[in-house]
Amino acid sequence: MDDVLEKQVMRKLFFRLTPLLMFLFIVAYVDRVNVSFAALTMNKDIGIDVYTYGWGAGIFFFGYFILEITSNLMLAKVGARTWIARILFTWGLAACAMAWVQGGTSFLALRFLLGVAEAGFFPGVILYLTFWFPARYRARIISRFMLAIPVALAVGAPVSTWIMQLDGTLGLTGWQWLFLIEGIPSVIVGVWVIYFLDSNIREAKWLNSVEKEFLIANLEAEDRRKHQVRVADAFKSWKVYVLSLIYFTLVIGLYGIAFWLPSMVNAFGVKDYLDVGLITAIPYGVAVLGMILLSRSSDRTGERRWHYALNVTMGCVGLILSGIFLASPILSVAFLSVATAGVIGSIPLFWPIPSAFLAGTAAAAGIGIVNSVGNLGGYIGPNVTIWMKRISADPSAPLYGIAGIMFLGALLTIFFIPKTVNVKIDACSRSEPTKQLNETLS
Image (cartoon, rainbow, N blue to C red; front, top):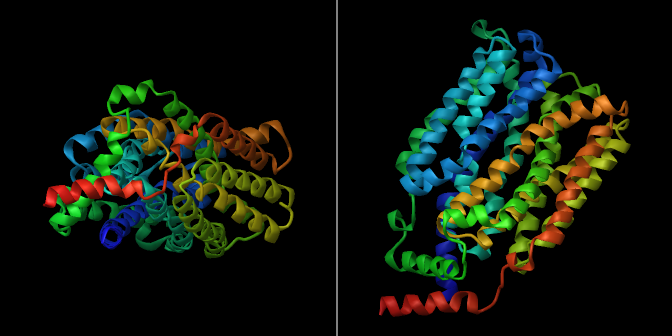
């Protein structure tokens, strides 16, 4: 009966929450990286060089950094429904405003404001999922949410390049249509979230009383085993700062690939915008499969550290081989697919780790710290290509540099993250909450 109830509740949570959150992240991610497709013509139109573009691609994350922790604490205070809706609405307006950039100054200013507006969305959702799902399910659930990244890039790539073909319609350029068409859904969905998203288990009318008590008992039993529950505990924890550095290296790989992949495909001699989008989608399609299989394996075994470190290492090898075979477009794209699976597939393996030792407001602050510091890598990633070209004439040097940084993160995971972040999967993981639930119901 316990297993039947658990499966019933998890199925309800999955189908109620995951599709919506995944859709929200797809919208967010498209608005975040569509500048990589706009750059194909925008840079020339508004008169910015590659250095200004790299700075603008990364300055988004400084806005993110400034308000990340505050945003997560606000979510915990005012409720997920209100705060996530506010984030969606404001970043949608900022994304649409990108259609009217006039030069380098306005480009940098609006990219910064887009980061400020979106600050807190991703860590807020990670925190929100800990309000609902027990630890032994989190890698799988986070992986389903994180599927939004490869899906956004796989679907968003051809869609974005198709929109670019509207160039000249109603007097607007293709990149202006791109920002407008992909920014408006965020504003609309922000209103929808207010009516559809529940802030916590108690608010969920689609769960009956038995299901609610079962979930609450499970989550409270897990929290009682955690000692870091206050905001100050997160700032005092050395593991939080190590995790921040590890995530920093992963984000460098993520955005180093995302912001330059369309340009790399274009450099292979692919000139048609739609063809660029379709080829760019291939590595992200491979990453979807890797993400699902790896997260399932990690949850089934309860092991986090080695799953993360080995998959990141695989991504490093893929980057190096794609650089070695850069002269062969087919081989280079194949190895870039391995690299992308290594980067994106590692994200859902990473995010269950902070909630393994943080609870309460410490979890809100800790996840905010890790994501805000880690996402500064979003500035480094797009600029690694520019910096490495100044050091070496080898066109593959940026790929080697990103691979080296990511491998450092894999080593930090093995040597500095304790085994206690792994999840113990046994009968005891359900017996205590179930006993409490039976006593409550009786």
